[in-house]
Length: 169
Image (tube, rainbow, N blue to C red):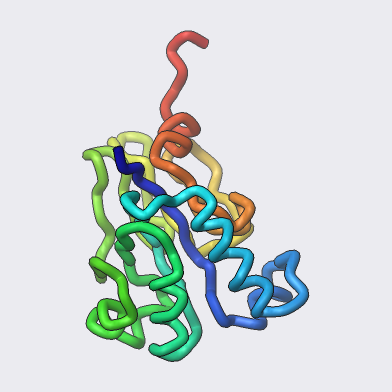
């Protein structure tokens, strides 16, 4: 049986993100290698991964190498740093699907790169990236940025268990 995973904001090849976000890596090569290892430690070849944007700062050849090294069927929702390359570039880089717009998953999870406005009456939880180590308050937001999750994708079950209210309480 395949599993569903979510992640965002790896910024593969982006040396400055190490300082910007105080990432615990000595070099961009170490960061990229560790993030590939952590991805593959939880994602199997038959699994699906929704990547919520800002995947790579590398050229097409190097980005393709990373995408091909990662397990799973990969769906990219374009982030602000991905948009300049366009949908076809990312498909050529190896993503199985690419969306320029947010996606609603299982009628409850609103998947986007940037946090979207969500009020208490909206029937969704916004799973998002973009804001790295910051966090929005409230049960309507779930920040999937790698800085919060030890640079490892989270499964759908993990996210569901965080956001669904426990009635037994």
